[in-house]
Amino acid sequence: MGKVHLLDCTLRDGGYVNDWQFGADTIKGFGKKIAQTGIEIYEVGFIKGDKFDPDRAVFPDVESFKEMIQPKVPGLKYVGMYDMSAPVPLDRIPKCDGSSIDGIRVIFKKEKLDAAFETCKKIQELGYFISVNFVGTDQYTDEEFIRGIEKFNELKPYAVSIVDSFGVIKRKQFLRLVYIADNNLAPETALAYHAHNNLQQAFGNAEALVDMNLKRDIIIDACVFGMGRGAGNLNLELFAEYMNENYDTDYKIEPMLEIMDEYLSEIYREKFWGYSLPLYLSASTGCHPNYAIYLAEKDSLSAKDFGALLGSIPASDKASFSKDKANKYYKEFMDKKVDDSKTLEALRDAVAGKDIVVIAPGRSIKNCTDELAKRCNDANAISIAVNFFPEEYDIDYVFSNNMKRFSKIQNDVTVPCIITSNMTDASKQDYVIEFSKYSCDKPEIIDNSGLMLFRFLTDLGVKKVSVYGMDGYSDYYGKDYYDHKLEYVFSSDARKRNELISEELKEISKELTIDFATPTNYKI
Image (cartoon, rainbow, N blue to C red; front, side, top):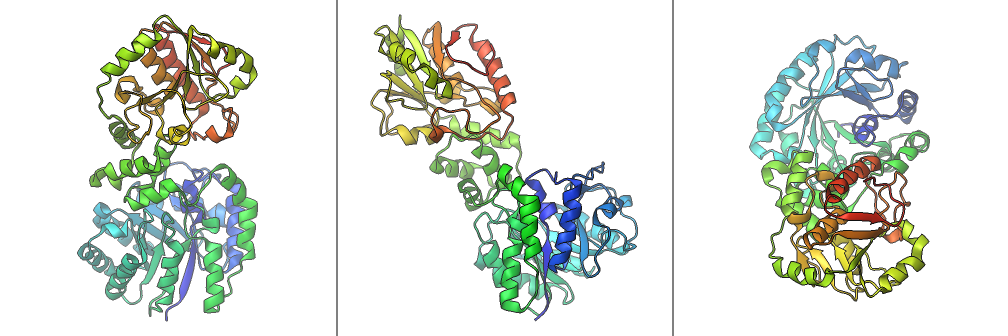
């Protein structure tokens, strides 16, 4: 059996969580503690960008690594990651003299394989050991993977890595890739595995690889605390403990726990990573995890719809994420056509000549319960609750465009519901209006419920509304809603959302007078 090596990639791959903003003291302290663990390889960060910032684990050249890793610890291999999607000029990589990193891992997508080969060849000639990392290895056909391996065999790289970019490779498929690699790799080349944990396969696959007792060396990538974008990565501390218990290694776990406590726990509280429904759905539908992360922030889709939306993304776009693509497919999914002419006719008659009271679920409504009760009991008023059902008030309608929220209240609602056409699974469909007619052009607030309701009321001929509880967004989670069950987090800036919504309100107010009866962060 060959030797098993553990590689820590927390600062590099875990850095996606916090934009690599660990701070200089943390980066230096992290490296010292990693050296105490006894692991064999330490990935310090990306070789990427044009400017060196000592607070970020991203380095524009090899020289920049030096001050962050001194003094180097004998026996520990220091490496950086070179990304073929954003390659820096090779003149930033001088001949290896042992004072900076020792090796370079080159990561590339399938279409960049030939360019990656030339880059690896030049880097190797400079004296660095190289690791060849096949991004999305499961996206290769067997023939493509074999041809890629055979091509890189010419260089006799230190390692070739199976990379589960989307966290979707299950054991049977993983073992097949291992057999292909093991049977075609040059004997002296180590086989590495880089996992993501969207389907919780990382530990099991790594365990299976080690237990195969291959003749060649094995490298297992892992992160302390499993730190990584979305569902995270293989936990270094857990796999090191597994190795100690089963293979007589002597990795020191305590320094890893100290890293968790001293450097990562605060980041974790602010930037959660770990198993989640959206990440499971992205993996099960073969989508880039950023689709799940981005679309989950909208907090508007039921699990069924979330899965259906991700599944509807064309295969050609699933592996490559952009906000523009995500917004495009979200809009297409929500834009379900419906003939709402009869709904408009019926509700236009219902609201004619009435005072319209809109009740949103902001915390400010707690301070005006008596006033609200009086308004709702007024025979000349029509009261509409937005995305919730306040049983303490005698309201007339519930308006909802959010299936995730509506699913929690629809069995309790005792008044007619006005819903948008995207909510095909709603059990109460008293009045259905077309989503696309009332949605916003700005992707960040495309489905803001208050804006959609105001546009709809304008279409009904309403000239004035009194608004309670439309407080706007705050930076502090837990401050926005009168009922904690309604709370959700937007990772995007609350101020930006308030500004965008305020701009839309200004346009709407040209036709509809909006009287805020409670305090709000919106400005008209």
